[in-house]
Each structure stands twice: as C-alpha cells, then as structure tokens.
Length: 540
Image (cartoon, rainbow, N blue to C red; front, side, top):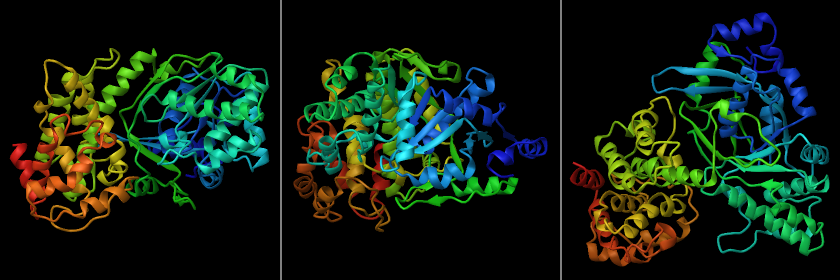
C-alpha cells in the first residue's frame, strides 16, 4: 500500500486500501489534476498540516460528491523542501487521519491537490508557472495558511524587515519576502487585465483579511512610488476587483504523531517516514487532526466562487465573521487553551487531553469560559457560544487521541494574552452592570503565566520555556524573584510587567487587578507544591 497514484489505482490496490478502512478518491485523480492545471480556480498558499487536513479534505469531499470538477493548486513560500521532499514523491497525495473523541479514527487518502509549487522567485520555471496561474481568467480565489507572522513587514521595534525593504526598492520581478512574492503575483494579474480575485486569508488571527490587505497595499504603494509598478496597481487593489475577506478558522491540527504513523504502518501502508527539513519543518505523508472544524468566510468573491458551503464552509457578512472570531478567540476556545498550556507546563502534563482529567484545571476552564467570558460575548447568530464552549470542554479538549501538548500551545503566550483575556477585561470595564473585581480566575491565569516564566515546575524542577518573542525581556526580570518572597517583594519585581498594556491589553493597575495577580503569584511561588495548593484553594 504505497501513497502514490500507482499505489491507489487498479482494482486490487483499491481493494487493499478499502479493506483496511481507508476512503479513497471516488474520481479519476489524474483527470481531475489535468483539468485543474488547465483551468485552476483555487490556489492556496501554505502547504502545511492545516491545509492538508482541512482545505484539501473539503475539496476532496466536494470532488467525491460531484460538486467540484477540479481541485486545488498549492504554493509553499516559506519552506520549499516541503513540496520537493513530501508532495512530489507521493504524487501530491496524502493521508488525512481524523482522531475522533469516541476512539475511532477516519482514514482518507486525499487526492484533491493537483499541483504543488515552491513560491520561489529564484526558481524561474515555478515562479513563471505561478504568474501564469495568477493571470488566468479561471482563478477565483487565493487562500492562505501562512501563520500571522507571514503577513508581517516589520520587526519587533517597528523597523522594516531587510528583505521587505529590499523588495520595496527592487520591485516585483524577483522579490524574496513572502508578501513581496504574493504581491508580485497579484501584480501579474493586474497586468493581465485587472482581473477580479478574492484573496482569502484563513489564518488563525483576528481580521486576517485586513492583515493581508495591509501587506499587499504596502508593496503596491512602495512599487508605485519607486516607479517599479504601474500607477494603476494601487487603484486595482482598492477597486473592488480584488477582495480581502475576513475569515474565522478552527481545527486543531497537531504535527503528525508517531502513534498514528504506527497504526498506519500496521495497516500495511509503506513509505510513511517523516522528513525534517533544513528549516526544521516536520512533515509526513499523513496528517492527524480532530473531527470538529469550523470555517466562516465573509462572502466577497469578485470572480465568483465554488459551492464550498456544501462542504461545510459558512459564508456570511464581515460583521458576523468578526463576532464569530471574537467569540472563539476571546472566550470560547483560545483562552481555555492558554489556561491549560500554562498550568500544564507547570504541573508536568504532556497532553492537553490528560489535563482534562484534572478536576482543578477542568474547573478553571469552565469558570473562565462559562462564568467569566460567556456573559460578555456577543452572539454571532450562526454559531451558539454556549454550545461551542460545550463542544470544546466535552468533546475537543478531552479527546485522548489528539496528541496536542501544552508546550506547543504555550508558544508566544505574551502575544496572545491581550486578545484572549484582555478583551474580556475591557468588556467588564465598559459594562455598567459589571466590574473587573468580579473576575477571579482570569487574574489567576495571569499569575500562572508569570509563575510559568520562572521556568521551574511545581515540583521544583527546571523546564524549557516555549518560544516567545518577549522572553529576552521577561525572563531576566522574573529571575529577580526567589521562591517564598513576600507579596511586597513580588510586586516590586512584577510591577513593570503588570503595567504593560501591550501584554495584557490593559494596565492591570488601572483596572484594579494588579494586587490580585500579585497575591496569586506569591502563593504559587511559595515552593514545591504551591501551584497545586493555590489551585485547590481557589477552585474548590
């Protein structure tokens, strides 16, 4: 059982896969790939796990049902080795494994990806092919999963990144930066006749369409000012011929897990070895993800769009997308993840699902979600916030087959707190019927994160902190604290952090929360076992 076109074609090969419970494409993969390459309608940027587990599977299901007659093209602009070492050897096929909370797994061989290309301007044939795709009448949308960092043009101090500055000056011919390359392709579409297109970010960040627009517009402005592009390019970006819809995406897709790989090997699947690229990207011929998924997109497609709603995608207006995004990011999922990430690291957990057997941690996420967050959520209409939280707490997070870790989720926590908790604090401030003093568990989470920054777990053992851009500033400050210090000593060290509205979304002193955080932290920093004792005290 080999993951390539030859390995899934022919009656005997198909029978071998199907007898092991695999769903195979119910269409002629080679014919669909040919039709897709000739008249592409959907190009995706970002060839990683979320795309393979979600977008590609949506297309597969719609191809199987006859709603679509063509698949997707994918371009990888960060790590070119992914297309070279994982897509090409498997004829762009992959296995999507769905890890269900009831203990069963779904196994699907996905054949909806017709072509995989490096988004590399130094690879002249590949870049020419991408310009050809972008210049065609048939292209309706370009979607993205490149992470929020992919849209960034500036560094931590606000300075223009060197490759971006070089691209601003050099123009659209051979850009190096990610957004420079994307903007170059869009310029090719402008030059081909100002053809309409939807540029759809499906990255997990708020107002993602605006982030994509801002990056592209910055390139258009610089190129026009530097006389590297036609003056009409700026107008094209703003004309309505090009749209930048907002979206909300939600599907937990950890990196491929070796336990899953072992199950597939036991089925007889060959060639499952993962690849670690020179950029330290871990990719395998399979992806594993949870069953629950949401994709809500603002319905703004100037060149039309496929009937993706028949594959579960929800189309709505921008205001509703914003409400859904805030519901998820500020209350119903992301804050609960951060709670579990911080305390999971402190308490030695290696899987999120295992934390959902811990009664104090369960009580914590229930209180943060239902009691403190839900009362200030604006109901988006198309999804019910209470039901969403219920699915998170009862189905998604406890799923023992999901190999997600608190250590992964703890990455970049300093960049997440302002949205995941700060917006709730602001909502309490703005509501005349509430006061921030009513919040008891959110400040406990803030204190837990600060305790996490000491890099010492609840048993007194050191542990590595997950990557975070502010560790260089925060850790030296936190190193001034020793276990067993008084609250006065603690506050003297924590004050500059607690005052930082960039971290928490608010100055914790201004909202009357700083003393509470200091008190919780002092209790949790009293020595071995203090974190657990504090949780039991306040979450009984």
